[in-house]
Length: 491
Figure 1: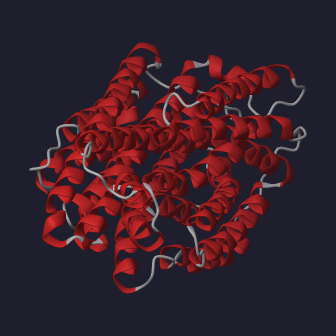
Figure 2 (figure 1 turned 30 degrees about the vertical axis):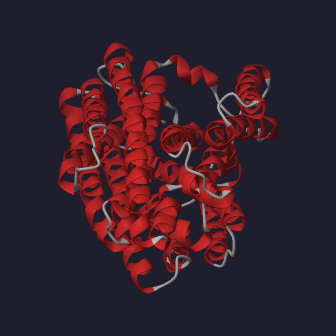
């Protein structure tokens, strides 16, 4: 189970160190980079609930092995993509495979370990593996990019998947809900469409304008579709999402905490990898090494969180993690053009520590709320909040950065005529601006400095907003999360 999860978590971070390479090799804009990350998260989060429901019905082992095969095939497709559009499509296909895999891993673990203490330790190992994947991803990506082309970061998934399938066939015990109801395809369609329209509106706002009728229409349609999804789930005979479990604060506040924690983590990783490579000038491998403290602290804090939950309870552990993450965002929001890696390191470490404390404690609270035979959908719900929270983090923080960057550049370049194609490249991303400045030789120095200054202005805005989100989540956890998780009677 942990080996299968490793592939999913590895892919959440390995692509981040390649984002600057995609700017250089495929001429990707910041908006396109957001879609490279979010196409995966959107398909992943949008389909996970229905995948969990189907896994409960047909067997979790079968769904897991099928997901591994889909993920492996899509990874090969991503590796040979010849354009940004094809890469985005391949990433979405990888998200489909991930949605089939992730809820099955946690559901099988929970079904295997019936004793609460054993279950807590197993979940701690599962969460630590997630941290390990996040840690290994940037390093592996950096090493591969040092010696091979950018597609190699996707091919690395294939041997892991082959090994996982070879081990999984004889070792994994199957489980299913023998009373499972029919899947809910309408609910799945509404959830994917709603989240997709909302993300599209947020990501496309910087290039099209926040007041663009198309952007406002997509955002409004997304919210309306999500409302329709909730209404449908309340009245359909066999809902994909059991809304009644959200009445239990140990479930609803814990899932919200997971989503908001990933909002900050995914958004920060999206920005930091570009900052380290474009602004500070590190290579992909050097960037991976410098991100390691974030993921390392997450992996170390995950098992510590399990022990803390038993001693001081869920409320304090989750709130402490959210406070740590919010503090990290505050520190990162003070980044300046004169700063270096050492100035950002404390904020990065606080962010990793916070995520490591939140995830196991929140997951333990979530799974303790549910009966044994609903673990597939329950663990999928947790995964949905994780992936959608992360996708929103990339969309919101990335779009705030892009908006401030473009506005800052537009004002500074007013009255300085530039060819429209050059101006589009400069405004499209910091990497594009630095490439234009580099081609201009010494005369491009002021443009490069201006682009870096604009990028830092956007970075500060994005992290400031993320800090407010984290602080609000901390207050919510302290006010509403039960001291200890409500436990469903073991079956």
